Image 1 (tube, one colour):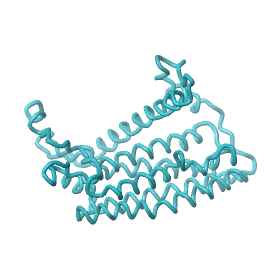
Image 2 (tube, helix red, strand yellow):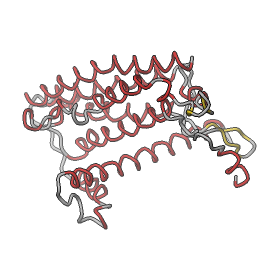
Image 3 (cartoon, one colour):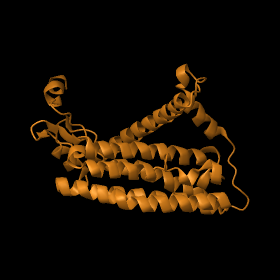
Image 4 (cartoon, one colour):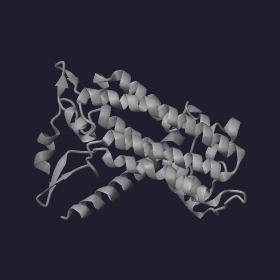
Length: 284
């Protein structure tokens, strides 16, 4: 099998996987919010509202696209694209399994094993800021501009602690590669603790997860989208699938952040005290 074909298959599989998880997360968040707030939540589209994300997607696809009269059209259109694409791209360096053999060829379960994975994540993640500021500025709406500025300031500010948390992991494992860090988390230390990043850098883990929540604009860091103050923030003037790209991009960003956290702090595909190869080897 050619290398380029393997790369395409990896990219397609990762995109489908991330999309499916993001769709499930929209349902989980809405159902969870309903339970916390003592209300039903989505319960009409299918059993337990399982088809609600599909219904929402169809609704956004079929809604009329309206561009505000005073909007700067190019910036207005580019905003959602620049926001959603970096979240997908960052997952390219996240490992999701060990090597496998197919057709006599060794394949790593990772789109690209680059030796500067951390720098790639920070660089790609910072590009989402352009999507936010372009969307707010291009809308030519005071609430959108204010929301875009607040969001940009927050995202840029929290990239510093995010980078420091990543740097702490680099000092522990001595590499910038996420795959090498995942491999280094095999086995145990002190005789019984898993060799995971969360045990070797607990403060770094707390710092990373707080900064990641702020980067994703989730509660309690939803200042840029505070409905009571600035309506819907930087995407106030957006509708149809352009709004869908912003909303879906946030969930994709959460999936990517979750994958990075697992790779750095929870041993990636390694489970403590269990040799998966001994169990799965005969089956495969």
